[in-house]
Image (cartoon, rainbow, N blue to C red; front, side, top):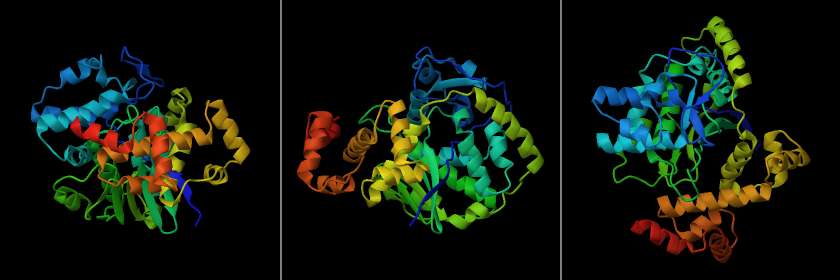
Length: 369
């Protein structure tokens, strides 16, 4: 069945000022992966409410907290990741990502992207606006929404800090939790997802997830995914304002023209590869079709980025294997077949090429420390 990419959903940001087009990096360490400083607003508000001091987290990344009020500033993605971990530890909150999703949904101020999304006419238009303007939020493309038949699938693929290192589980919870709360707010109904899949390992007690999502997620998945009825995308957004939408969309276009470009095409190809793993490794023609390109055009654009489809497939297999071995108890045989290897021995050879060790040795090392 044909599958078409509909849109991508970014994390919510909150600030009443639009600011001038353009961005300033405020970290002395210029990271290739950055986010707008406004992404940190929910953490800061929750820290203020709870009386927590988190200045040390910012200083470790050479960031002055006073500059976070600048809507044009960019901060390292690593800082955003560390904030999720630090806040979870200091609040002793095992489900911090879900808690933050709830807390941030109550904030009523937005940046320009937030206004464009909130004033859209339909749920689908709101998601499409987010994908168009996501470069105002991130230097990468972490999230997508695909539609297949009567089912929509919201998928999040935040980049790993480095091969084998884990994305904070709190961030994965927050992203899917925010997506569901956004659907509920836009439609004014208690939307129930068809399924929820999370990459991180299952917690000892999953009752908080059952309470939040209405169903128990599948843990240890290859992607973070929220599946729901595709018909919701055609529903009107509560509080839609077409006049405001036109005004803020024009402003967003001006900002987009001056925003950092990033390497979005490679991210998009990687996302298609990962989403195809459930049915087998994709061919070049299949990936090109999903991108709306010819196979030759796709190969040329990847060459311009200094890579090839086979190299990206190899990277995706490596990254998924490392996450599965580190964050799940899934058997090596199952991981090998998930990644499209016909034999476990082929997976072992590839893994040794990637890491210099075997899957069992890698998992043992991670368990020790």
